[in-house]
Amino acid sequence: MEQFEQVEILLVEDNPLDAELTIRALKKGGLANKLLWLKDGEQALDYLFRRGAYADRDDILPRLVLLDLKMPRVDGIEVLKTVKGDERTRRIPVVVMTSSQEEKDVAQSYDLGVNSYVVKPVDFGAFADLARQAGFYWLAINRTPPL
Image 1 (cartoon, rainbow, N blue to C red):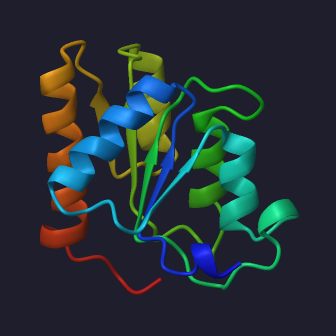
Image 2 (cartoon, helix red, strand yellow):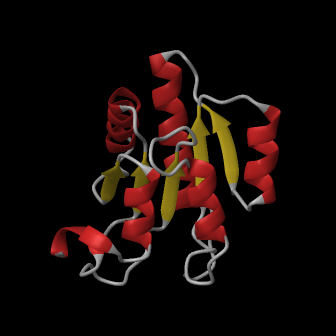
């Protein structure tokens, strides 16, 4: 599947409006040309571990995962636990971008190894700015170890 070989940002978000705002903000910042949007945690795990529809994709991991927590089928906590618990994927920076402000979600995410936890602002402009800043920081400023 050649279309997936250069994915730098994996956006895992079930809300189409939030996904569209994130993609638009990243495009505005010049960061979305190598982005793949998946709509639930099961798709994300299939992509990351080359299963199901993604079994034949190249073995190149994304440089960043933007992850929602509240999703159908497999939630973000389970995705985070699986990604950070596996030798092949644990070094991928994962930024949780969620509407949840619950302390238990924040604590559990950090306990599982999340790199950043961000609460989505209600204001569309502020949300777009947040997505652009997160993408820019993790792809252009932050230095990550080799995957």
